[in-house]
Length: 72
Image (cartoon, rainbow, N blue to C red; front, side, top):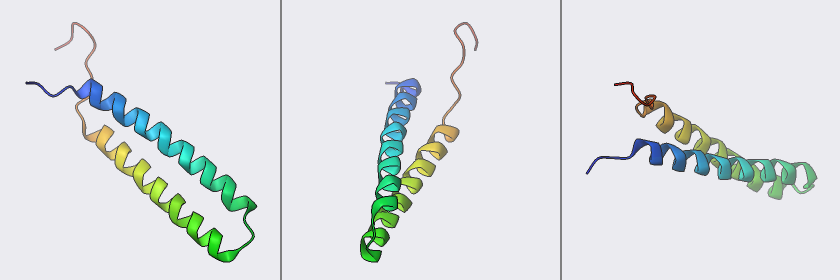
């Protein structure tokens, strides 16, 4: 059984899109919050989302690059 790198790349891309949505929403929340405790909590969410984005980028970079049809 061969590992399907293209399927893994697509899954990582989809995951990264979801992380981007979380990050965007958390940044909007951060702008609207007035309490220090709430802002600190949102900072944790943002930090986690940024870490997830870095992990997915690292995984994508470590995968073999797809070859065009006919190339070997």
